[in-house]
Length: 157
Image (cartoon, rainbow, N blue to C red; front, side, top):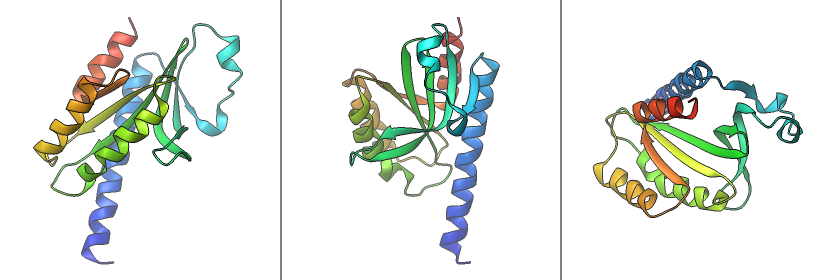
């Protein structure tokens, strides 16, 4: 395997670890974690106090097709899509931020959208850009991983 392929594998593994960390915090804060294959959408209409986190949930992408996103949080009538990315060293993940933002726009206002980022490898300008988009877009939030964990705790109160 070439060096670039190995780097991609490491980045994917690191991203999966971030998803696992987020899932653990969701469970600690009372969310029922469900794989999309086990999700019964009729529960939305049967349970008023529902609090679930659906993994690998479908959502509408920038291009208008169905994609998959790390989590769909459902809290009562509130639905929040959660996209997470980890960038530990300089790389190309921050070049995906416009895709994340414009995909979020495809889902707002029906659903809120939270972008969670982690790591020290992000370009400052890229984070500044996406934070600016969040400050001017209702229903779109950008949070560092630690901030997201604290925010999840507020949803449990």
